Length: 189
Image 1 (cartoon, one colour):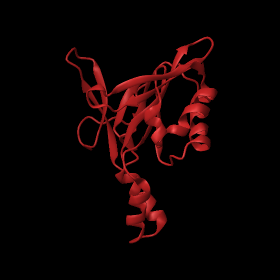
Image 2: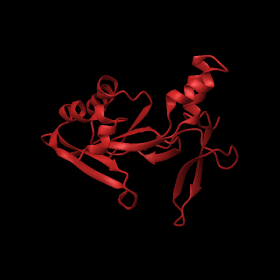
Image 3: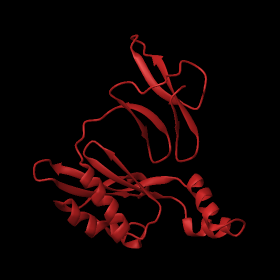
């Protein structure tokens, strides 16, 4: 049976094998259930779903950020932030926090009037999308020091900007995640 993966948007993806221009195998996920489908994940590869719900077959990356560090950010979001809907993504030396682009409370209010709150939450998860707002970048591998960066939304400047000084991740999480979804976020420099 072909390898299938259902993403957060409840779309089913199938693992395919193709060929590069140089004749090497190429692995990818597609919504199409026809073609050269694989039954198993190739050795050294993994399924990766980005915060937007796109699904990829990628080589297993070298682990730089620890599971404990990711858990620190998760716990910090639960403890210090008012944001209910968020995603955390790890790439190389960066832990990135994505938050929703929509007013989720208002959407829930509208759709729960026609159905129960549980069903409304399920529908909400299918409708919302996420954008990156904050990231923690490892700057010192040995001392495990990070710097915080926030996304700057100033028209022509749309880019990441550093906030504060390098510090331990737990201290940075405690100090900065509380600003997500708040006006004070735009005052961080």
